[in-house]
Length: 408
View 1 (cartoon, helix red, strand yellow):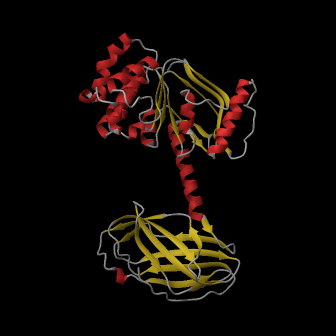
View 2 (tube, one colour):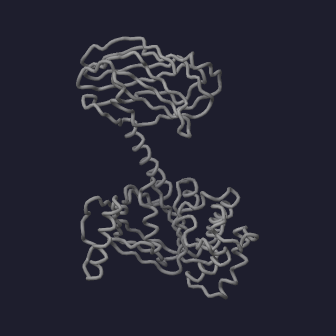
């Protein structure tokens, strides 16, 4: 592996503003400051600002491939845009050597009213190639992109798959020293993705690559090293296997926090958690959930609601107990049972909430718990009854025991 450092990033940070009007005002202030020769890099966050990228540093050599991973909003695309020169950092220093090829957004760098042929020459010229050099690569680009019969059509008429094929073909065929790829291969079909990975293996021998993807299997396969970002800062920098493990641990931590969290509009109710919920259930079989409450006061005439959504977000079932129940002060546990779950086989999200006698919501479970319904006889809606089988008090008030009958 070469010692030729092509990318050097030192303490790079970038901030944005959450409000458009305020952002425009700050932008004007910064522009005037630059014209006057003022140093804005030491400036702290102003109102409504946040760090999208916070103090990131790394080096990348020729022949290396860096996997940049993290949850949505972690700062990956912002970092790539700074590396490509589309935006400037507020702090830190970026040093890039050689010719840079980038696929950061679908269709980025294309003029939509120009044809595919014209865009090839425009992109090649931007990279500093002469017409003769572009001519030498032209047939290779067309063959790789597989859009020969559409090459003289305006790019705005291309499908998303055609755009990404042409963009990838241009970026890799023109032999960049640095190649930046941001999740664009997710658009292409499976056969084309295989071609792309083969091409990347060829390009990386002479270039430095940064590969952004949520597909950790491909990151493990292609990359020598991973950089895990969270909330703009570097959470991990090292071997792909350890980086992927760190990435999954971040997701697990967030999932665990979501499982414990809830949204409450009634301050005395300090906790509303789903203690247990089945991950898989047979169609038409009973469905049991165990809930845990913690309240500083005795709540009366509250009602429980179980809403079930399909993976498209549409309501598949909505069960509301018309009979009221009470929640005593302290910690209490309740076992809730639907006598039948008449849903077709598939995957669903379950949401639980509590409302008062007037129908105003007191609290929501902040997690859409996923369940899988397997084959069986769905039954009918009338077969389904919502029942509180037991109401056990752990601390404080003794609690109560009720049978609540309801239908979906």
